[in-house]
Structures are given as structure tokens and as C-alpha cells.
Length: 263
Image (cartoon, rainbow, N blue to C red; front, top):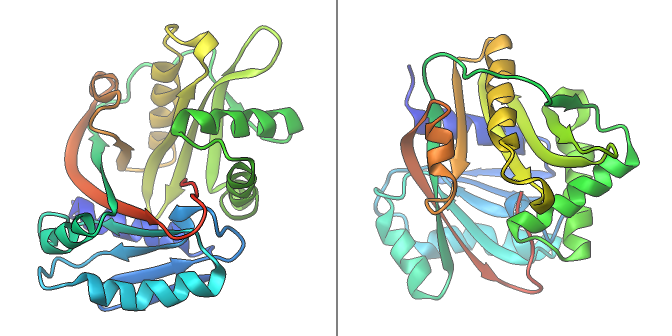
């Protein structure tokens, strides 16, 4: 099987292909989209290289003018090989950019048992989109303008063609109380947006949704299924469902104008 980082880069490259500007560089790519200037994950630098000599000045020379052109809010850098590019990461942190880490977990073995009450959401109801917007608060995104841009990104870029499939659990009144999404790109399956609203927690909904997503990915013929989780997040939940740590990626962000949001 190919290197997990190479697969991650292929996945992100295809996911970003629906955005307005993707400019390759020797070290990765600069991505911007003037439709979503407050969404930091559509306006950022993708550092793919393992070259330890890459400097902040080189990244900024490509990223800053691109961000300025679309009025983007944040200087956001994603490092897919942070161990090798540690000097760049140190430079970013030293100037005050906020670092974060994600564990890349890959599923292995047989899919976990999947049962009701998880259903596929067709996302053809206005109240489902409104509920999805409300769920973003669980990821620290509450500013109305940012929420609207993220929902527009989902509808206009990721949703068409079935690239992103939504699953969830509905409460007694038909309102969604737990969400999860599956992206199938570049021959990979990505488990995303696992969230349960506070009033429905403790019932195993997240576990059931993740199990369903794994089943759906396997049914689609996907061999490599992965997700990203904060080191302080529900790592044990995912381990209990057959996921194991494969690598880690790093990101940094500093505010240029008004604070924005990520996907």
C-alpha cells in the first residue's frame, strides 16, 4: 500500500480542485477562493515537501499575495510532513501563529457492526441545512457570516455529484441530533464531521454513525479509510471501532483580519 501521507496529499489535492485558485509550488500549493474568504481551509498553504530547508519567507511569498487578492481572513499553513519541516513550524510558532495537531487514524480489519437508527440524509430539507449550521458550534465556529460561507461551501463545492454523503440520527420530532459525513475521493474514504448535539449525547450515536460510514466506504470498494482527530479528542472511541494512528499532521494559523472558520 502507498505511503499514507502521499494518499493524504492526493485526497486534499482532489478536494481542493473545486476551489477557485490552486497554484502549485515546488513545496506544495497555495489555495484560495474569494467566495469563502472567512473559511481558513479554503485559503491556505499546503506544505507537502519533506525538504527541511523550506522557510517561512518562501511560503509567505506565495501565500500572502494570494490571500490579499481574495480578502482572506487568516494566514493558514498545513504541514503534511511536520517532522521533516520542523524548522518551518518553529518559525511559524516563533512569530506567534497558533499551532494545532491532528492524528491521522486509519481503519484496519473488518468493518464494525452497523445498526439502526442511522440514516442517510439527502440534505434536501431546509431544516437539515439549518441544523448542520448549528452543529458547527461544536467545532468552535459560531460567527454567522462564517457559518453561512461554510454551508455554501458544502452545497456548492462538496455536495454536487455525491462527493460528500451525510448520515445522521433524528430525534423524536424529526430533527437531526447527530451528524457524520463520508467523502469518497482519490480512491480514499474520509470520515468527517462527527458530532452529536448535547441533548442526545451518551446514547452511542457517534459510534453508530462512524460504523455506518466505514460500511459505506467498504461497500464502495475503498481500501483506505481515514479520519483526523485532535490528540485531546475521542481517540479511544475511534480505536474501539478499528482505527489506529498512522501519522500526524500540523497546522498553524494567524489572524490577518476578522477571524474565520475551517472545514
